[in-house]
Image (cartoon, rainbow, N blue to C red; front, top):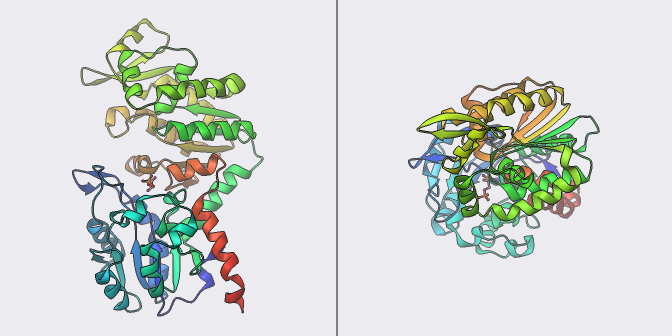
Length: 411
Ligand code: 3PG
């Protein structure tokens, strides 16, 4: 696959696909973690004289965090210390004129790519190649650099559509992510512990199934809604309030699947022994085997309990490899961040080679100054897809592009 150092970018127009899709509160971006992660690639290209056209998506149509990229451009300008001009267009005449007018070392940021209909669908590379987005921009571009690891599981025009038309190059972050995840997945070191939390339960079940079946994991620790589903699959009752919530989220239908995984791998899947609920506005911890668990009928579970954190910590301290994705609870509320922070902190303290991801939840790692994690992945769904053993369309596109251009470049 092509790496950044393979080409000379002086005076060349480079389309740089980033994933700086970020958590939003009251219409404002609240974490610049994904911006910082791609900074080395942006700086490298600018220092090497590229005319830089940056594209990113932010959320999806009709969602609350679906906003323009104006603030993204402002944040990147602040981090770079030089202007990143926000261009309120994607591939229309205005955007194309702006691209043509770029000078070496200058950079623009296109509008949220998902404002374009073609960018919202998942289609094979060949179809992405025929979109207006790719056809209009392709004649203006010399190279495509893709540093959007967090979107590597998406087959969309800006992510894969240029692969057979232009050399598609891995950015520094992409390279680092692929290297770390490949190491964690491919190694024979033991014990290998996976921590699966968060709300992407079906993705996590796919990971659990894959890593257990292929002998990639020795133990799986569960939390968040993944923990709920496995706890139910073990036959524990989690109370009406929690069942209703899970029903609404379409999670109850996944319990059978979790049961099938337990049928084969019961001792390898650990579930929480206690949980924290919101009781009159405060954190209350309840043991799964205690009588107090009737409170689950009226109070939603928002975190794993301290006893679970302690048990998980013991396992993590002995691990050689740790892969963790997703939070243990509603970490956005400080009193329910105990589980997530406790587990992430234990991972940082363990001497294992560790990879932690989970999309927006990694913000909590920075907020709580947790150190010692070998690799903090920017990927949520992309990371899960990787460990589920699936082919990631963006990684496939890099291979396609390399095969297509390697001889032409060498010649
Ligand atoms: C993410 O945050 O997981 C990536 O930005 C991908 O976003 P998506 O799930 O909306 O495609």
